[in-house]
Amino acid sequence: MSTQTPETETETETEPEAESGASAAPDHQQRRMDEKRARAEARDDAAAQAATEFEGETVELKVFRYDPEVEGKEEPRFDSFTVPFEKGMTVLDALIFARDEYDSSLTFRHSCRQAVCGSDAFFINGSQQLGCQTQMGDLEWPVRVEPLPHQDVVKDLVVEMDHFYDQMESVQPFFDPDELPDGELDEQRQSRENREHIKLSTRCIWCGACMSSCNIAAGDNQYLGPAAINKAYRFYMDEREGEQKRQERLEIIEQEHGVWRCQTQFSCTEVCPKDIPLTEHIQELKREAVKENLKFW
Amino acid sequence: MSESYDRGLVEDFGRWTEFSAGMWAWVFHKFTGWVLVGYLFTHISVLSTSLQGAQAYNNTLSGLESLAVVRILEVGLLAVAVFHILNGIRLLFVDLGVGLEAQDKSFYASLVLTGVIVVASVPTFLTGAF
Ligand code: HEM
Ligand code: SF4
Ligand code: FES
Image (tube, rainbow over all chains, first blue to last red; front, top):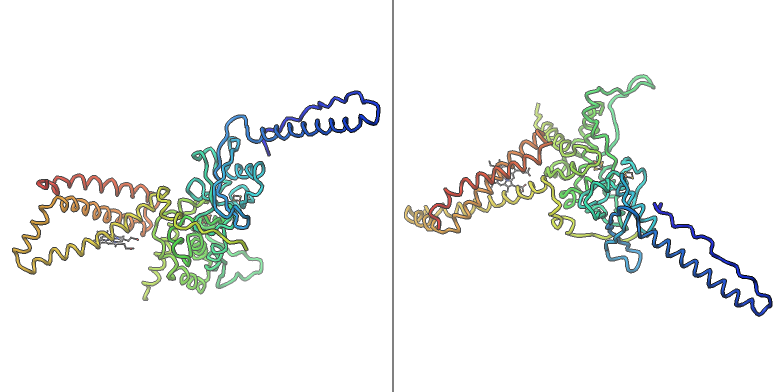
């Protein structure tokens, strides 16, 4: 993926007149071997040159490295990579360049490259962002890329996501209506207003940026976290949700490690790559919980 | 399974230079709240000297007020109280879901207003202190 292809060397081999006589053969062989080696070296030098010297602008990428399985790499450190800058280059592009051109052991998750799969949330220049959604041009250089804070690091930029997924599952993120429409093929309609109400909450891509940014989630491992609460909001606010499920869901939301842990620091809302107003949703659920508990009629 | 690396405290308050408005508001609110609780105790103990008679109370108070340090601490107390009240009002709005988009601006406004009020109070607190 190098922008500069190493120059293809021109054929320089000049075959001298073959000397006759068997005794000359080893010498000839020797000379050919030497020439070959020299050419190979020149080629390697040129390739190395091409890989480290770029025309135009370059940007320095400082990447967190850690590999518990390789001796000498168990101590976390930062590696620097010089990457040719192109207009429109994302942090993910730069990481891919570094991996492909310099160090194939550099490990990070990515898939869609278009902010849909949620697999490449990193800690970029001190805030949680998707690598594929963040322009190198918008960042301060050198760009520092670290794995998401508050999650255990498995290797380099790869963090343990199990706990985050567990929290997401714990709010029972599925639709459970009381009554089904009569006809087998009937749709379960939702009003436009209701759709608007939950629209933003449906955008979550499970990237974990919000959870990683949350100071409370860091201190309380049982805290549901912004994404899970937002997921609960998505179903709780859906007018088609069954009454039974609504009550159950409210109990999950207002448990000790639920919405009341939120201290409105707004960190999650600020980092969410899908611009979900997480704090707003959490606050709305807090008010729902209070209203529900004040209902004595 | 590979062992994973825990980056420890560096992840939290070691990152204070990267905190955003909402986070600072939270830190300051906790801090000022607990300073106010602390003040409540000293306040009660100073006021209780009146139990030993009017003269004892007057002596204690004039003694304290003649100390420059106490005067300066009073300015600090005002700053802490004013910020806590203003940010407390901001938090009430946040709880009501009003103006969440402007939560950072309202925090800065609380800070600036606190600053203005504190500066305006300096003559009252410090005249004759030195
Ligand atoms: C008009 C005056 C006041 C207002 C509007 C106010 C408002 C608030 C609000 C809204 C909170 C909740 C913060 C949150 O959501 O986490 C809070 C927390 C707190 N307040 Fe006040 N407050 C006032 C006066 C005081 C006073 C006089 C004291 C001390 C005696 C105090 C001590 C605290 C403390 C310690 C906390 C933190 C509690 C915690 O750890 O969560 N406040 N204040
Ligand atoms: S709420 Fe936003 S930050 Fe949190 S997991 Fe979903 S998309 Fe990511
Ligand atoms: S690679 Fe899919 S979200 Fe970035």
